[in-house]
Length: 592
Image (cartoon, rainbow, N blue to C red; front, side, top):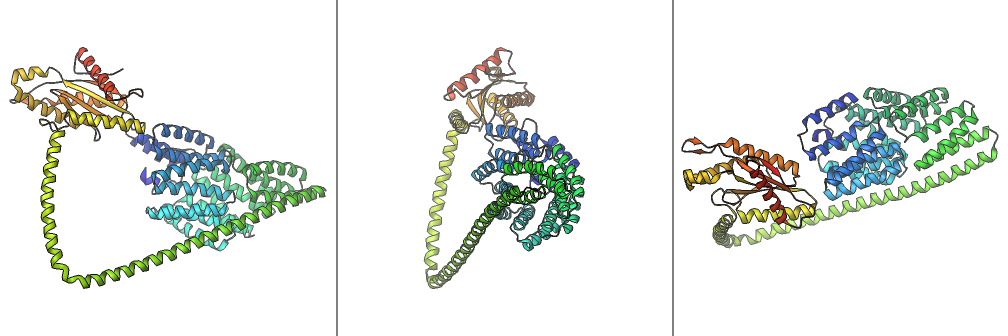
């Protein structure tokens, strides 16, 4: 999963995705809710490319389950995944809250990689909405974070997003440079999905440069790759881009054919994010064919969809095209009204562009200022290092005094170390059962108090097991207490081998023991208890060369939300233990 999440596993087709998800599923350990949630958010991002509604619903369930388990990393990933499908089901504006929730959680976790992932998704949404400056800040911060954690694959992929920003800002040469780098990288690692993304951007770049004919080849290549990968949403996007190019080349019939195919692909994938652009391009095509009444209706539909998506660039394009259509219909007043709307949209875009340029200049100024401050700090550091070197030369005569002082300090440290070791030894003796080497009664009870406090604070589950050795008195009576002590040591050794790394075992006295199971529910606690029972049954402690067949009885209790402390919890586990004895011994019983 880590290799997949880091982009080291290339998934070029739906078959490869399904095969990888199937392999991950088989590798999941049973009853491991933590890894199950990690598999869940990987599945969320990969499994629903052709079912946006299904992906949105799955992400919602994942958020709820992760929140209940207080699993912040999983919750952040599911939030980002929900944003992905929210943008397809409704609008990119609606997706922003989910992205921002995921980023907030990732920042709380100080998980740089996860923060960067959230920033790239939010940046993509902001860019589509025309907020290029904010989007660029997100992409640049993500780039810094990817490089800081050494994820060069994600950093290189992020360059495509930065190229998109420069294209939309009209910096076509910069965009082309980034896209050439990205295409070379994608081909080296044979990543067809990234090749598709670069081809799409090259097509858009050619169209926006006014060379619609040059857009055809990269967009057709993108369409071929999309069909190869099996992504209906990508196929629809490539067809829509080709239709836009066809309209720009006055190939209106071809555009309508491409739009019909694109619409079908988006419907199959339950993707509504492009409905406004589909209607707009269809209206332009029908207007180009002289079907102005039909185009008028489609322009009105497109306006409603584009307004819902809050995309000012698309609105300006729509008003200009609809104005020409109104003129062709002989409606000069309506044509003038649309031209005025276009002027307002252009003015809004100009204000937005001015704001973005100002913001970018401020960002560049702040960056340069930080670089100057860093250079000044470096110069100050170099000066201080020179001063220190000079002081070292002057203080050479103090070496003997320093050596003598060091020898004295060493002697003091040796004495202090011996005292510390003695203190630790006494402390360990105070907390450890002398016979078995595990926690004594005082220490295991303190451990239980601490575990209950932590479970309350973090809303985690907690389970305890009480057990004792069946008929142990007969061992002492038949073989003596010295042999009984040896048997106890062997049984404790068997129990420790059956416990998990974070479980804590302690001796309450005699042959009675307590096990504390942090972050464990009742069902998992019963599984641990059964392992203990089986381990003791199989241990067969040896006495005078003869193996004894011994067993233990166990009671298991889970901390209740209404319980105020450990007394009630231990009492319920003890009652379950005696219930196990009453029912025949050598068994596990759960407290009600």
